Amino acid sequence: MSERERDDHSGTETTGHEWDGIKELDTPLPRWWLWTWYGSIAVAIVYWILMPAWPGITGYTRGLLGQSDRTDLSGELARLETVRGQGLVKLKVASLAEIEKDPQLQAYALQVGQSVFGDNCATCHGSGGGGARGYPNLRDDIWLWGGSLEEIQHTIRVGVRSGNAHARGENQMPAFGRDQMLTAAQIGDLAEYVMALSGRNADAAAVGRARQTFADQCAACHGPAGAGDRGKGAPNLTDGEWLYGAGREAITAQLFNGRNGVMPAWETRFSPETVKALAVYVHANAAGDSGAPVATTAKNVILLSGAAQAR
Image 1 (cartoon, one colour):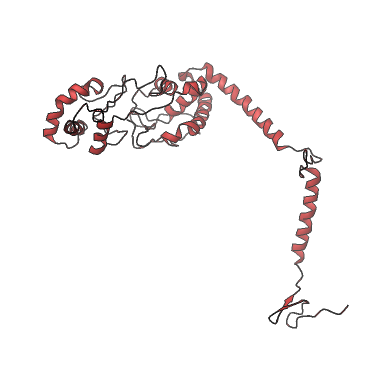
Image 2 (cartoon, helix red, strand yellow; image 1 turned 180 degrees about the vertical axis):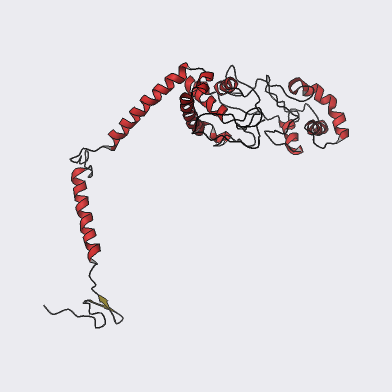
């Protein structure tokens, strides 16, 4: 066998290949890389022997250790269900007041409620419950049907205009324009009147013209002074909290179209203890009457505050 040619500059043998006068060097692989490669092959072979690795027609190689992630996961889920079952039993028999007085049970309820809220409620109310236009803010103290634990639980159970026999929202906002109950001019005057109720600049003449219209069409639900009625779910028109927007155009659109939101009745989808946990979570993340977050002993819940859009 003839001796292979060596490169004059580097002293390395060439492969014998040449392109446009450039010869390819046959540089050997670094020793460290070569031993790492051999080691990786050895580890792979040991893994194939000890662990499940190779698929077959009717199954797979089980490995000498008999390791199964599926079995491990099933065991973890079974243990988790046992722990959850114990917590759910306590939730089932405890009253809402008892849950809030028991730090450990409250913490468990908050964990369950947070998970359920994220999967089912955050789509409309936002991940932090801050709401959006048309979807109530659950972080403040503005509640159409009350913000106590019992009232929140009831709203979650029966929903709003959900078709449930006991659903909230049996009284609906009329579509004064769409149903031709009022003229465009009357709706415009009424929008000015509502602006004035919340302490903002409004056309005085329009307010005067709309006074009787408000008494005839709106006062039955919103009250003579526009302060609202929680028993009927009628919003307070004298504050600065608006679900569909506070500007003239937004108010006019609401008067014209009479938007009426819908919320599902969750009592047919969740167990009573899950509804309880969700109510505890929503209540814990809401603000108290003073506007400050409600105190809670659970460390895993971040209490939020923010601008309200809850009506």
